[in-house]
Image (cartoon, rainbow, N blue to C red; front, side, top):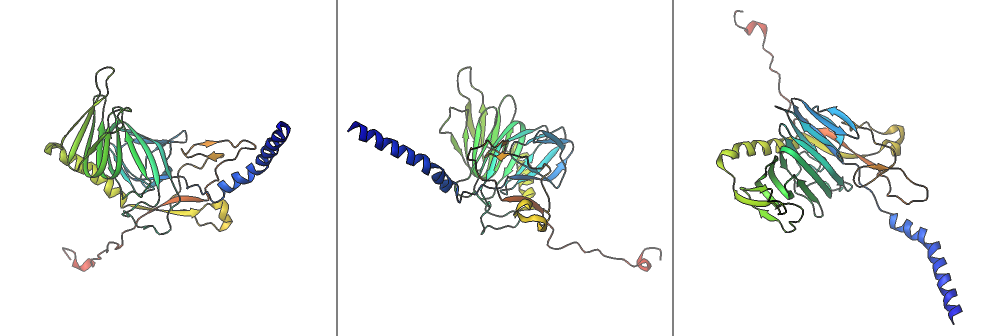
Length: 321
């Protein structure tokens, strides 16, 4: 009896070995990896730098970069306004360092609205951004179901579900001002529940005593701070109107007939297998990896619907004629 049972187990194990590759192939079949997310520099004032793929660039208006892993730093009297390829605008104030730890997107939905400042983001996205110092203003479209957006600072984090918010941080505290929308503020990694902020409210996160979690104080936004906060967020919202994002088939898939992208990413895509975090790893022999994306995102700067009219004045109508 034991011999029959042993033989049956051996036969079942052999069958699983034979079927495993086909089952794995079925799981991979139809799984489509989203294109690499992008960010577009809508406005650049003063001296600032963008570091991506281990290369450093001077921030310039109307340029696009791969978003994952990008670090943006502004100097004194400098600022940037950028737009993520999910339609979110971010204004980066002077003396600020922003690290985009993670920003991934699923393939764009066919029925999405492709105009600038679209009311709904084009696809599900997940973003994790770290504001090491300084201040940013964030202006989002409506996030689709399944999307997540988190902004962290040295003192805490903000889970943004949509709206208009300002985040400022230094070594002493983090200040979050909500103008519109829905966010949850957390003080440190152990604060699982967090506190919900309402429009017009300010949350200040301060480090606690040694061994204690940070404290969160919620008040109304002070009138004297309202102008600065409004301008910071308005700059983020205005940036959203300057660009649209489209997806095209990668040139490798289209061949020589591929149309040129409007604004290509400043950094070429690295070789290897792209992971969800935007990094690349070599493909090992015999290892099943996620399929490479077949599409890429391109930024298209918007053009005013009505171009300015040049008025020509005849020379004989000028004064003194």
